[in-house]
Image 1 (cartoon, rainbow, N blue to C red):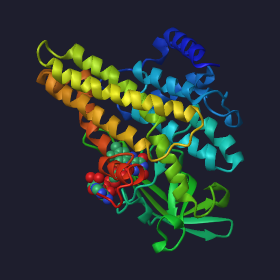
Image 2: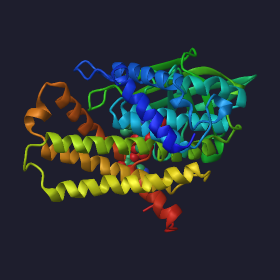
Image 3: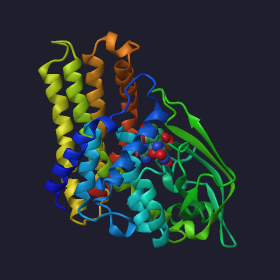
Amino acid sequence: MDLAEFRAGLDRWLDDNAAALAPDRSASHGLDEQMAHLSLVKRASYDAGWMRWGWPERVGGLGGSTLLRAYLGEALTARDLVEPGIYSMTEVLAPTMIDYAPPALAVEMVPRLLRGDETWCQGFSEPGTGSNLASLSCRAVRDGDGWRVTGQKVWTSLAQYAQRCVLLTRSGTPESAHRGITALFVDMDTPGITVRPIETMHGAPEFCEVFLDDVAVPLDRTLGDEGQGWAVAMDLLPYERSTSLWHRGAYLYRRLERVLAAAPPGALTPEQVGEVFQQVYAFRARSLATQHRLAGGERLGPETSLDKILLATAEQAVYDLVGDGLTDEVLLGDDPAGGRWRSEMLYARAATIYGGSAEIQRNIVARRLLDLGADA
Ligand SMILES: Cc1cc2nc3c(=O)[nH]c(=O)nc-3n(C[C@H](O)[C@H](O)[C@H](O)COP(=O)(O)OP(=O)(O)OC[C@H]3O[C@@H](n4cnc5c(N)ncnc54)[C@H](O)[C@@H]3O)c2cc1C
């Protein structure tokens, strides 16, 4: 199926099913409800075929260009049917499973994620390990036919909902840095795993602490080879900075339109609005080129840090405009729309932290793209 045919068919299907797919936007629509609604939308899209396009046939997909699934994410977020952050986990984790899991495991698991039957999480960061990921210490020790894992992860998004986790572990010596890391695919209901949600300032327990105490993981749950975890992480991050950012950009544009509609006349100057509009479109232009490179079979790498910098800058600019343009009545009021603006405005501060902080992205640009040597 080509992109034009896909867009026309999907848009028609979304129009026809608008009522069934629309989320309840009342005040009680918290994270639990958003997660349940995400599953509903993914299941309906999968069963109708749309969620399967752009994914390889060997894992239950229908094949075709990755541009198809980029458009699906754009359509679902721009129509406000799913929240972009929680939708993006599929785009981040499914490609990693397809590339690195033993083939039988990928065939068994990927359709569950695509169809919304399961949620997965990404266990990379630890209390002492964020930007310097190569220093992680969650320990994996070989034991007969498997691994025993002990350690702690933190900021693990959606871990309280997740059935599986892509977990980075230290399988080499403590000094082995990026050479001694192994990636595992762990069932979250394995004995020894404790998940504690963390309440964020935007009012939702979006991420968690995850404690692992002598957790048994079978050997065939190793992603890639033992010691190849760094390559798994480095190949995953460009997805976090490409396909999943595209639909976030679409969502931002929609929210920018909404701020303009909701702001009282004269509250925002044309210069302010123009500046933010430019930033959203600069990201979109950059990300469009990235989507085409991915669809063309190019291997994405450190250049996706530019996409992340542009997106995070645009996102914060949009929500700065919200703060400037909307009245206190909207921003401080009790109605659901005001609560949503408030929550999104606060969450925008995280855009320059998650997926690698803005400073780290700039270091990558300096070192890997501009060849400027050591960290700034
Ligand atoms: C909303 C949200 C969701 C997240 N979800 C997940 C998830 O699902 N899974 C997961 O594994 N992690 C997740 N994270 C964690 C995220 O990846 C880390 O927060 C991020 O990598 C930064 O690490 P840190 O918090 O340890 O900060 P640190 O690495 O301690 O950095 C602190 C500050 O120092 C700066 N800094 C650090 N090193 C340098 C340097 N060399 N040069 C210049 N400045 C530097 C950083 O830019 C930052 O401003 C999430 C974070 C957020 C906010």
